[in-house]
Length: 278
Image (cartoon, rainbow, N blue to C red):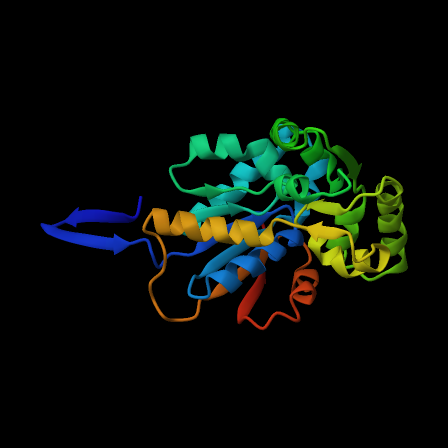
């Protein structure tokens, strides 16, 4: 898994996989929140990111559709010579990760809502989860939730429309604030002390959420944990890039490239955003 060898005309050519890029995909621009954490923790790794905005949001699609789209994205990243795949989408992970891991002989990292730390640290025994319908209704999410939330009340809210607004670049708008606030009120009424963000798009809403929530409510997303897991898997598989150079980063979208550029405009990493039909 760590290298490929070819024997041609009596010469053994060794091609290292360590210098190949990390592949990351999401159902749109939201997975860039995971991409930022990975590139921060692993500055010497090259990355390729796919924003599948044409088919966003995945959360309203069937399990079969989500799996088909996840396979499409994985095969494109393999075509681009990636050494590991990070599924930077809660809905794709909870619905398709099992199929991807059985189909491809390459490390595949998934992401799911960080219920465990919220359940462990809650004082009020009330935890809020804001996620897509596709995540909350998935078999993997239900199993994880049941495992960690005994004797804890979990207030699940489907964030209908939030991904669509983020994909249109309408984050800091009155429309977004009103919609988001309507989802937060039921959680506040239940006295939650932790809010789990179950979609990789939602960390872009943290500044708005902080205006709605008291300082006593802790917001949890999975970004840093996914980055740490990616590093651990690279090390375990001898795939970590040992070069001292700074990584190169290419982000592709099959949607509006300007929206992806704008959402990354404050990022100081040297990166390239390109339109690509996939």
